[in-house]
Image 1 (cartoon, helix red, strand yellow):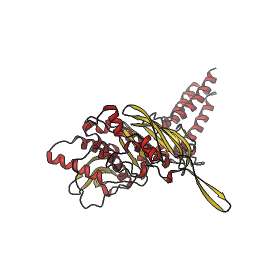
Image 2 (tube, rainbow, N blue to C red):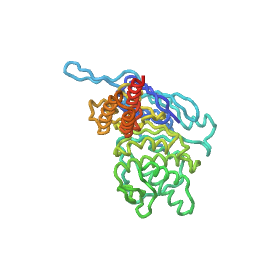
Image 3 (cartoon, rainbow, N blue to C red):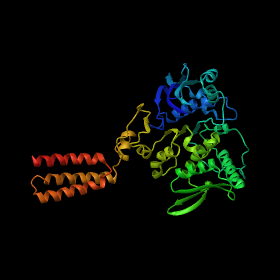
Image 4 (cartoon, rainbow, N blue to C red):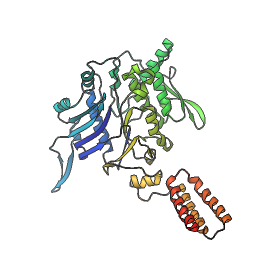
Length: 433
């Protein structure tokens, strides 16, 4: 399942808006109020079209349009501020691929139109294959909003799960707030079943591997009977520690909770894939403020780790972090979309300062020590270059070594290297002419 593009008409802050998406990762940027969360909510409505009429899904109201979603304008008449809502329909139109079929669909605030225009995932599969079989693959669909903070649930004891429908993997999937109960119950059930039956549970191992692959310095993740909770073994400040989930930092809990939630939903929807369930399940995942509670070191890795861990999932996320933007540098599988410019933008520099200034509109950001060092090296470089014409051959050789040494610390910056070497070739060419 992929959503290739979405069009908004009279939706929240957008009178008319169109957005194309990357097949793998799209990052939405823009100032506060530019509509990042609105676009993610609209995508949740579009993705929610596939879940209409599925029993026991309980995906919250995020996948339905309401009066609050209607575009309006504020005007002053006399001394009064008047809120005028659009008299035209509020519509979210989308196009994409599901079950290898190119389709288009639309949602509006009209309940009858919702049912008529939306496409149900069950109906689509039955239409193409005649029946939902054991081999049917369901796409994962999930939305993680800024209100997520994965805390331990209040129950004194986590109950195990009885056998149930695969479609349970869609329950509350579009609720942007966190809910650990279903994840914890699934994890405990799988862990106890593995112990009782003395067998390797392939979907459990796949989920466990997904958690460890996403978390910096994590070594193991398991359900502990004594703690009645997920425990994580990880390296913190050079020491290996085992920490219960509820005692982890906000950054760890948010990332582990989100990744484990995606993985367990995959395992619930497509258990027939066993050990390959994480790598082979497609779908769409929406993340508002992907950098939430993450250390900058982790921010620079989170996109790459998500794409490596869930290679067939389409991610759409928002962020204010220049470190997240920087991590997309030279990645052809990622799209950076500026909502204020209403266009995709290229990341043509690895510098945090340049990203802050040119992509995020921060005026005259303070230059880094690395930039200042490069500036000083360039000045020394030009000074040495000026000495070349009158120098002897031995002196020229010594000066060339100086130039090479000045460039060495910046070998990872091809643009800087190329610029200075062009000047060098011009000078050396003139001396040989």
